[in-house]
Length: 84
Image (tube, rainbow, N blue to C red; front, side, top):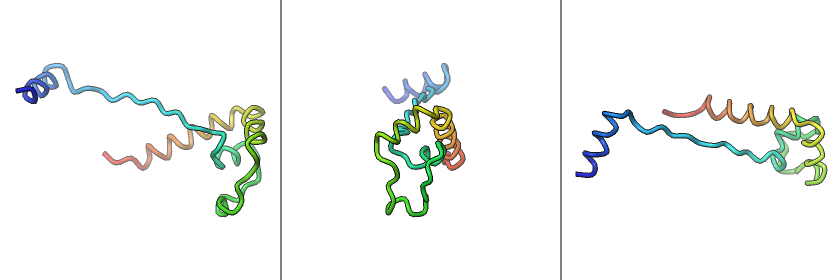
């Protein structure tokens, strides 16, 4: 009974939309540090962790465009490889 009510509601009023909020952390990701000008070899990221937390925070504070570029890069990568 309930299932048929849900399906009929979807037919009459369209299926529900899924809205998500993407909130990426930019302080701990080496990609944003590279975007902000830090010299990090991403192939050896496990061997070289990069700058400490204070330097990472300063990098983002001094270059907010790097954080926006990081967000755009990650969202584009996720959307390019999504499965339907």
